[in-house]
Image (cartoon, helix red, strand yellow):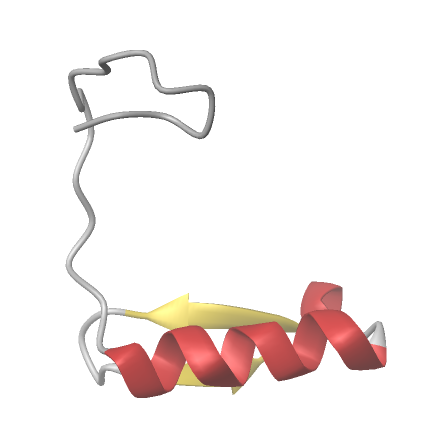
Amino acid sequence: MMDHFGKPVKAREWFLVQVSIIDEIGEKIKEGAISDNYYDPASIELKKH
C-alpha cells in the first residue's frame, strides 16, 4: 500500500465498518453534528448520545 506521496506504508490498525456507516459519518461531519453521535458496533448503527 502506498500513501499519497508514493511512499510505502504498512497498516497497523484495521476497522470493520460498513460503507453506509462511513457515508453517514461523513454527512454528520459536514453538518457539524458528529460529536452528537457514536458508532455502536453491537447494533451496527450510528446513534445519538
